Length: 309
Image (tube, rainbow, N blue to C red):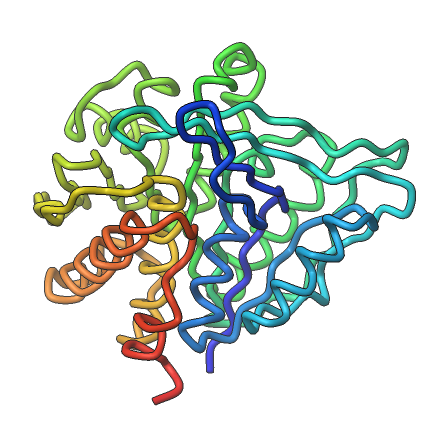
């Protein structure tokens, strides 16, 4: 089976509703993606770092139980884990407060040697982190050179707006290195000041020939490539929590690439039939995760769609 590498931070999420904690679990955008893919039977590794404290032990145990390989997770000996406090509003959308990992060690990641047809999923804060930048870009360039597929989700939140000028060159380079860019309306409003898919794609196309998947919550999803412009309806649901929706959408992209045996070096070469499979699968997974407090597809859905069948 093709290898999938998810590059992203490990965080411990504490979820609040009406100012009271209602759940807590390992999180982080690409960790959530990796756990969904592990449950779905994908051959998936998480590339990240972690503190060797109790929360770190809980997180590693959780990853392994969900079939996510941890060979490329760097450990900080004397450190405290990252935390994310998520506060759900009346519509069950979340606002976040983030607490960085506490360590005196320099930030470090361990990268594998990529191979042809591997799939690399990356983004979020790691996509903008100066300390690991040189190694991350080298890995992405190597992956692209050997024929891996690269998918980027900027996952750019309101808390990041004060660093936008500093990280914009990094975001642009990430887009240049990617075949598919997946992001939310909120991401692109903060990054480009655009509040619609056509305007966002116009800016993206000036940077790269990558395809754009633009998600807009209940308003659905827009796909833009050189050859196609398509809108897909969102599922009609009453969400319990939208935490993890974008991350599970990202898992749907990785899953569909493996399931449908998609191999390419140019997003413009994918037919509309295959794009439909990618986007519709991702919408289903994303809608499903909104119906509970978990940040990943449920074991029941994973069994139904398992790549191991």
